Amino acid sequence: MTTATQPTGQRPKVVIVGSGFGGLFAAQRLKKSPVDVTLIGKTSHHLFQPLLYQVATGILSEGEIAPATREILRDQDNARVVLGEVTDIDLTARTVTSTVLGRTTVHAYDELIVAAGAGQSYFGNDQFAEFAPGMKSIDDALELRGRIFGAFELAELATDPAEIDRLLTFVVVGAGPTGVEMAGQIAELARRTLRRDFRNIDPTSARVILLDAAPKVLPPFADSLGQNAHKRLNEIGVEVQLGAMVTDVDVDGIVVKDGDGHERRIHAATKIWAAGVQASPLGKLLGEQSGAAVDRAGRVSVQPDLTLPGHPEVHVVGDMISLNRLPGVAQVAIQGGRFAADAVKARTAGRPTTPEFEYHDKGSMATVARFAAVADLGTLKFTGFIAWVMWLVVHIFYVVGFKSRFTTALGWAVSFLGRGRGQRTATQQQVYGRLALEELGSGFEVSKTGGPKDQPVPVDVTGRQSA
Image (cartoon, rainbow, N blue to C red; front, top):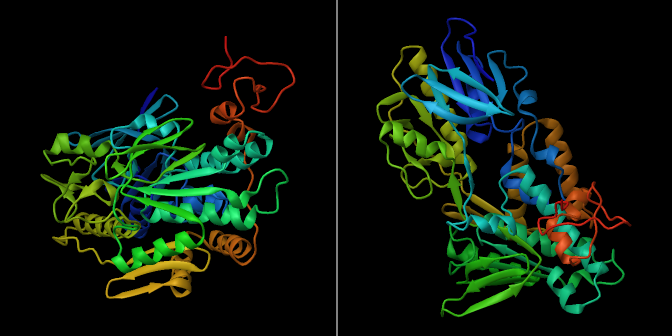
């Protein structure tokens, strides 16, 4: 079924692709403008992606970092939200095509802001995703939560020491901010939250391994901060292995090649991919139509004012752009979204636009463990408790909505001041998923709902019922 959007009046039509930082902040910037805004989101929520790892490790619920986009924009009368995945953009016809559950909609536009973001990159080894999920969506975080907590549950049932060791080995690939934060929280989960919850296993014996092909932790940060984070990770029990390139990932573990060319296998049931990003495929599509170059990561080269060559009405922001080596961080998307919205307001009012986007670097931060973080604010650098407090304040500020801020702060208090984790629930499907079936051997049985069952149900290696 295909439908076409109808104009709501004679006012300029602005279409925004993406409900992330760039798209949402652009839409909000246009609140009082005499334009009609259509925001097309692949999901129905706005995701605060930097806190996904806290959903995966049970600190926060998904609702606290992913409020409904409609709720955020409900008081903005000139904006409407449309659920759908953008499959085509026609720069000549000035239309955007989106689809959801077989329903296709064509949206006409006068001004277009593309903020479709980026996904996980496996550097040409997409088969790794089956065994080592990334962290780019709520689905990813919930899947990882099930795998992490499920690994401890399955280890409690195991009797073979080697199998217990494999189940209690967690490998995080990528020593950037996401990987460091994830590894640190898994280590604290095992050593603080779960240490007294099991009877047959000792959760504190869990191995948490952080891998990266780079020679240092937190490559984008100053060397002193990377060294500080490395030291703190070691103190909380994280094994940091640098100069280690991943060459294979399977259900049993991961294969890495060290700097000397030697390959070795790490037996681990839970693998997490936090290395590399790939821009939305829309970047390539826009490049093909406008003649703009597209780099290996799928980012499209834009003009200094974030527009496409020959198309001043098309603005591209966030992780999709290649311009002056801008980092793929939330602040670039936020500032770019606002800049693009200001350009739209100027163009629709007949005023000249600002010729060049200037990114104001507000610094970089990463938590390492409870009460420990690093903050790189240019000439000012902080570590330890002070940096951790700064991290809390900044992230609370950017969480959307008072309710989400309050519940996020409450979740942090439970986890950081106490030992608990308020969001440890994992569904049966997550715990008894395909990987879990193989942990317990081919004889493990599942019901149609994903849980154990008395009567055998044949399953194939993917966990589906056999014919």
